[in-house]
Each structure stands twice: as structure tokens, then as C-alpha cells.
Length: 388
Image (cartoon, one colour):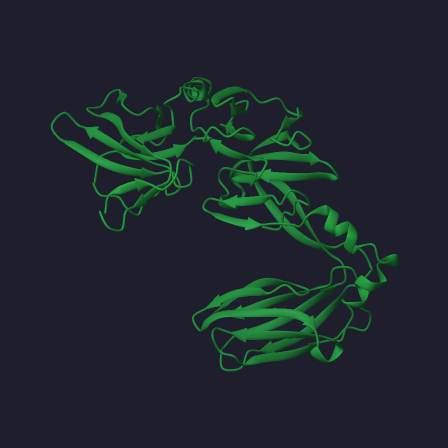
């Protein structure tokens, strides 16, 4: 993820992976106090080299990178063989001032995308969230955050979000019967029974743990904390003749831990805010207006989301607004050259391996990792040691 929020150390959450992004703006301002950026540029100028290291091998391959004018974008035409492997690195373009641009593109089969704007002291930045993109499902920080979650049936979104404000509600159970493509959805309340219409099944949430774990000594399920780090529910299934129990994990909708082969498929989506103020869940459905869930004085509340309205985090100087909701869309992030000044140099390369070709954007002083059967190849575009 290349989103950079320049204050409060925000992060983008990708399901269970979180990428840290950006330092405090005040530090950035101090770094740019040098006259006309001359000191900054002096650390960027050549001579340059591309360092290639494969797996645990200590050997480094060094390839010089030269251009006639470091301030102008230009084509490159070099093929670098990685000795001892069939891998080739093709250097194609040099850009002096790399910039990443994120846009939303309409695409059949795409998902819902929400454009948010985060504002605060010396900060205004657009953020893109999508429940169908694992890399863009939430933003979080010490002062709050926003997650986006989807309801399958737009007709039931109003009813479900209101049921999710119940003190015992922890999320939504989605149930697919054998002959249906779209699921039935129910608020998951421990100790309540759900009767599935036109079927023999009854479901009940037997247990909820916000931070699922297995005790290494007793082998019993325990919750390591009261925060929704790895939320899970144990569901009881009654088919009129037999009773089954099944754990469902919110972060593993296609659970590798499935224990029983049942005639119905189930998924659990956690909506547990942990009672934390400043955290929001944006609830969306195809063709429906969005809703917000949030905590207020320890109670979960809901309301229709208003586009353009500022919703505060716990630090009232910072807020977010929902600018637009897109249907059938995907988020794309592409590079471009921003100017003819040596500010953020990069080399655009193609890695050719095993019949495939993958573009690699080699940003200055940022390692690029590429997995192969020989191990992980690391590429680093940097100044030559002799120029330090």
C-alpha cells in the first residue's frame, strides 16, 4: 500500500496485515528547512547502482545505473542477467520525480469503493476503502479509525445495522443454503436461536471470543484480550436429528479450520467496536445508502452516513468525511513522473522469470522484494558507495 498519511501515524489494515505509513509532519518540515532543498538533492544525485541479492546468499550483484540528465525522465534499455538463475531484469525507464496516483475505475464485477477524506492540523488526504479489497478494508491509529464492511442484501441493511446496536450483538452470520447463491443474514447475538426459513436448521451462537487463541497447555479456546483482534464465534447447528458445533472466524471467512461437512455454508463478520470511541464501521450494500456504526459513551449507535459531513476522531482536531460511494469499481494505483526535478528518483524495471514478466518500480533507497523458487530476491536502487 502506498497511501501515506502525514500525521498521527495512521495505518492501512489489510485484513490481518497492517502496513505502517508516514512520519509526523513536523519532522518533515524540519527536514525541509535547508535552503531551496539543495541539501536534499545532494543525497539523491549519482553515480547510482542497482544492488541485487538472492535469498540467504551474502553475494551481491552490482549494476551501474547511469542517465545523461538526472533531472529529465528518459527511456532505458539495459538487460541485467542474475547470475546462477534464469532471471533477467530489464531496466526500461528512469523518472526523476516519481508520484503515485490512486483512482477509482468502473469495472464489471468490481466491488463497492468509498472515497474518504481525512483532515486535521496540517493534514488533508484522500483515502480509498473497499470491502472486496483486502488491502483497503480499514484505516486505524491511536486516535480512532474507520473500517468498511458489506451487507449482501440491500433490503436488510437498515434492519441489520439497528440490530447491531443491541448490547449483545457481536456481528453478522451469513448463511448459504444448498440451492441459493445469495445468503440469509442475521445479527449474531449469543444465547439467541435463529430459525432458518424453509429449512430444517436452527442456529445459535454458543460463545463469542474477541481475541481467539488456543491455550498451549490446556488446548482450550481462550480470549487473550477483550479487544476484537481475532474475533470468532462458536455456532451450534440443529438439523432436527443431530447437533453440531462449529467455530467461525471473522478474519478467515473461508476457514481452514472447518471441522464438519454441513449442508449449509456459514460466515461470520465481526462488527465489534470494542466500546472504543473514535472508531467507526462504514456499512455498505449494493444499491443502498451507507450507514455508520460507532461507539458513544460505551454504547453502539448507528445512523445513516451523510456524504461530506465531518466525523470526529478522539482527537477533535482530526476527522474524516465520506466524499463518495462507487459501485462496481476497483481502486488502481499507478506511477507517473511529476516534474523535471530530481526529487524522488526511481527506475521502472521488468523482472522476467519462468515465462512471466512483472513490473517493478524501484524507488530510490527502498528495497524491492521478489519471490522466486531460489528464495526472495531483493533489489535496491541507491548511490554507489564510492560517492558517499
